[in-house]
Length: 407
Image (cartoon, rainbow, N blue to C red):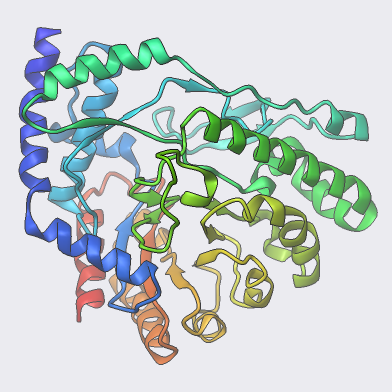
């Protein structure tokens, strides 16, 4: 433990020095204004990184031996690496967040699969899911999870970290972020092509699946509320800054779903009509979405032509504009009512070359379109499963994005 403490202390001191910089307050204010629908400039962030490749950097070499402290070290090193190489508009808070020893936040989805790997170190790989939902009885057999927290282990870990970081940074537990994307989970339990045909051939069966998983998810949220696992101080929702003044303050110190962000999506509906999207996602999942203070909606599915049905979600605040979306049509449809969350194409830095011109064109187009319609905008590069070992591409993307955002 002495060795682990000796490794962590100087890392925390460096983190504390960065967190105290005035720019953190400035970036926090920018995210807050943009999220509160007061357009500033586009905000920039990179998420879902190829840490298996970044791990080759000497800066990411782990030294802690205790498994939990190794997780803490990994998190601190990741923050320091981001800050040095591609800070974008990240905010470094003056604290160290620890994960709870929590189990059961599975939303009733227990996949059976075989994986096909091109790189065993990469957590992005091809999935061959075993079909589990063929009959109404299969759906009814989906179990409600029991969420549990090992309070004794939490207390032990907290005490240890408080000893390590005393006088450097405060320590706290971060909460659970709720993934309300029911359709992502259905796609892990039923073959996607069959699932899409079910929308036509077995609509009642499809509704049964959605409602069952919706109710299980809502029950999970309620358990998290009761256990004090929700967190209104999370920095990010899904892949983007969560700072805002528009969430209700917790009453009596207890954080409820109405005090936090959640995120939802229906990526499998890429080729589904607007009417079906509305009927089988928006309408059926509204009771779940309604639980939260604010919602981030969408991911890889193009939503530029579906903004009118997304508007039915009363608390939606950010809408994803994926690489397959029509940028100009999306900005016009949003017209300042939500944050336009652009997802630039990760392939432009992931195929072994840095394609600067199309990178610039896509972001500049989004910036100009959002300016025309007075719409808050953000550039969120995500799903970067590889950069073919060219770590400098992440640094270069940061420089290009920030140049466009700040020009």
